[in-house]
Image (cartoon, rainbow, N blue to C red; front, side, top):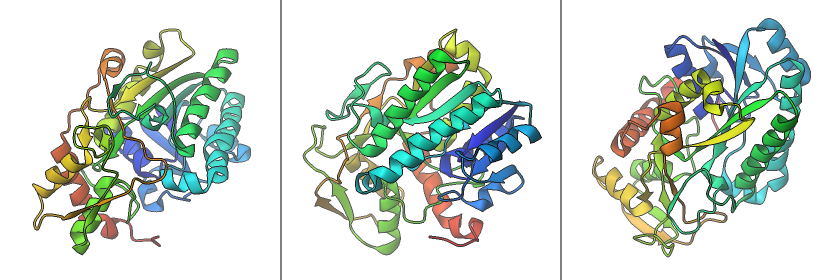
Length: 333
């Protein structure tokens, strides 16, 4: 099988590409390298450019007429940035995705595996959600994902397009073989900030301490990126079976358990020395209390459950942080 991965030089897309290669699926990567890394395309079929560029996608399909599906990972994803630049986020995540689908349909490619997000849920109470929970995103980033899901479903209802939306919870870790990992040196998510604090000796800010959770800090469902990659492989293999005649369907990808920020700090400090000190801080704009997912649909339709623990995700994130600069040798942010 051959698949097109948009955003395949980014954190998720490159890891999915590695998982595909490991099981004999050939990834073809399209990435503008705005946030992706050229190093992650080494030894892989790669086209540099924009997903909205019809001529580029036409060339991809001319060169690879045997592409069976598209894994759409290309997007901007930083919540605070989406609050300060909503126009840029809607253009990159919605307008360009719409243009991309037009090009896919013109080239006869009708299977779309969409990288969606748990940020679309009404995650104000810190509890569990499933695929039928209310969709009330609290940030422009989350709304772009919800808009794309609805847009793709509408298009699928009137065309041959078929869509599986995989709603990621909170990816951590790296490819266990350290081929790829989080390309950003200073990521904005909690584990990245913990690693930075540990390396610099700074305090770690717990942003938000009066959420309706068991200890007042935000709660997230931290899923190892290699588990996410395995879910993509399963979804590619079972795409038509999982849809079972439907035009569009969503599947949550998470561990099924929630971890608060304070619990994440405790888990992190159990494997590093010296421990990271914390300081309480106000919540970031657009950040909800959070949520974790019920995993019945992924298990039933894809035969998939997360197998890597929180400790493994932390350990692999630390291993990747140690080698990142030796792997990513080109210009850095």
